[in-house]
Image (tube, rainbow, N blue to C red; front, side, top):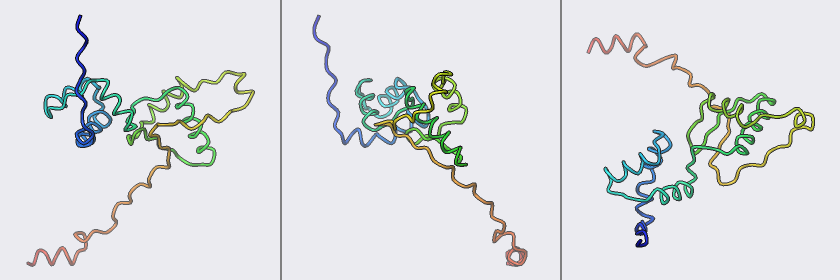
Length: 161
């Protein structure tokens, strides 16, 4: 059996050119790797292997999932911020995680036994090589109380013209 043909090396410039599109497809539109590869090949003539794409996503810190230890860190930080009275929003690779996703992960990954609870909480270490942000939500935008179009004499002036 002949050795498998190696995919050609793809230049960094080409990867950088398509990085925003790959980010949009993979993270924002939540496409699978297979779908991203299909779209890149059909519409852009760009044919990386699955492993090449996975490697680039790792280099760019574009992740959709976290490990159990990373979820424990997130939960610990949210709990710590809650004690101080701060709300928290979690962003993974620049994409905001829904509250339902966070709650589901808490239940799945952050279970503490009675022994662990009695021993006290040990702060988990911050994850390395993960594009993770936990911050306070931006204040809600206040609707404009006045608008130039709502001022009566300006409205009347536009009718007169």
